[in-house]
Length: 488
Image 1 (cartoon, rainbow, N blue to C red):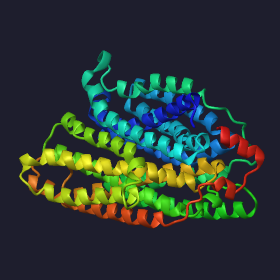
Image 2 (cartoon, rainbow, N blue to C red):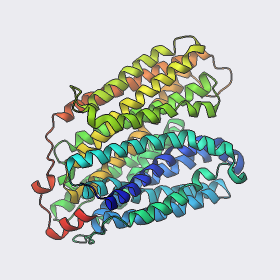
Image 3 (tube, rainbow, N blue to C red):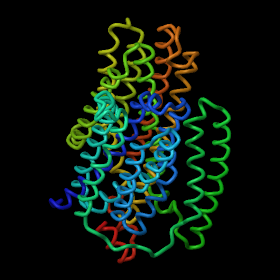
Image 4 (tube, rainbow, N blue to C red):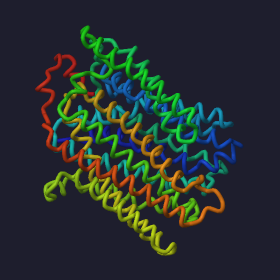
């Protein structure tokens, strides 16, 4: 049973999830206004979005492990405070260079805030049934964040609140962050755990390797120099990191990636499923936007509103997945990803129809995709958390969130390269025949459908892996640490 005080605290951490979701989409919608207002180049606008993702991914695991050490609630509070301040800096930035810097700092603070959310849920809600309910709400919040980021951001820009143009899309985080800080104080405060030092070497290597990989995936498709430099550096650093983690574990230390978490039954398969799932989602959002605006020539505001049904159906799928779980013959992640794959295969056929009938069919397509995605997220997250003890929830959450960021970047890179290669031009170039846009969408949809099918097969295999719901009993932790993590 979750008390009223705990629910208010959980609302605070869910509101933080909402903020990070909004900020993942809202800058893309506001990019033209930012570029015009700050007289920025296209490469600078790319960095406004990329800087947040790179910093977010680079520090995610470190932020998660720090939460395991000093308490998830404490690190969450630091992260929210930092995110609120850096959002203010973003909204007040007078130049593109300062906005890129502020966005990098915003991503860094988000990396200390976001991984604590699932860890706090895991440690606060010990009953599996009640936790599934909270994770269903978590999925709804993600869906609402998508709606607000894509459509709400465009509305804010169009309203031009107080003559501030694009700035309110980032400044809105400030009052929300202050409310989150107040409500988080209602969560129980645990005792700090400092039994072992944080793996600073592992943290440093991760902070170098992950940005190199993300830069390659985000900027590489448009510049092969970045692609090969980033991938080469990432592979070298990850090889060193793997050796360092093994040696630290053999020496009795506490590595950034604990073997007991990485090797937990089904954990690696879970992370691979997360990677595949979010790569499919990000790739679809990209090519859908490309096709609506440059193929069907729909204006940006209307194109943004065409994403709104996805957010609602995603929230609906998340809300009903617990009830459907008892009525559907197959595991929900398998059913949800299979539904997404089926719709994407159908989408490849929809764009062969006359141009005028396509928009409503594409809205129906994205709506069904949202519902399918909503059936996946909460059960997948619940499965990951159930494979570790509460004391390791931060590490598991950090790994899952980091893999999510890599998956998003991978999906954008792969789908973007496919779309532009088949198109034979940059989306938005004048004079490209409509038939070429339809063909590009068809190939990209088939690629993403194959990836969604792969995700469904991975989910089916994952369902057959053993789950130790009482992982904390199977892997005892010191009494002091157990008390701390149970109250954080």
